[in-house]
Image (cartoon, rainbow, N blue to C red; front, side, top):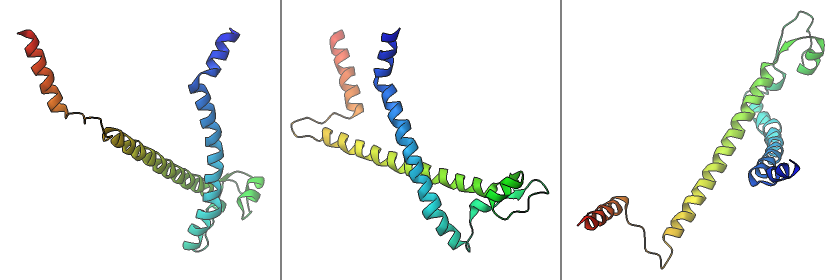
Length: 143
C-alpha cells in the first residue's frame, strides 16, 4: 500500500497540480496587491476619492462606525464595497489569465507552423486531397 501511495504521489499530474496550487496562491497575492494598491486607488481618484472597501450598510442599530473594520466590531454589516473589490479583483485575474492562455496558444500555433514549414519536409496535403487519395487507393485495391 505504501508503494502504491509513492507511485501516486510521484505521478506527474499530482506534482503538476501541487505546483499549480502553490503558484496560483502566490499569483493571487500579486493580483490582490495590484488591485488594492494600484487599480482601486486610481478608480477611486477617477470617481472622486471613493474607497470601495469601506462601503457597507449596517444591519443592526448598534452600528455607528464609519469604517468597515470598526463597524464589524459593533455588529453585523452588509459589506458590499468589499464585495465589489473582490469582484473587480476576480475580473482582473480572469483577464490576466485569459491573456496568458491566449499568448501561450499563439506561441503554440506559431511553433506548429514553423514545424510544418521546416525545410526538407513536404507540406501535408489539404484534407480534401488526402481524402480523395484515400478513396482512389481503396478503389485500386478492390480491382
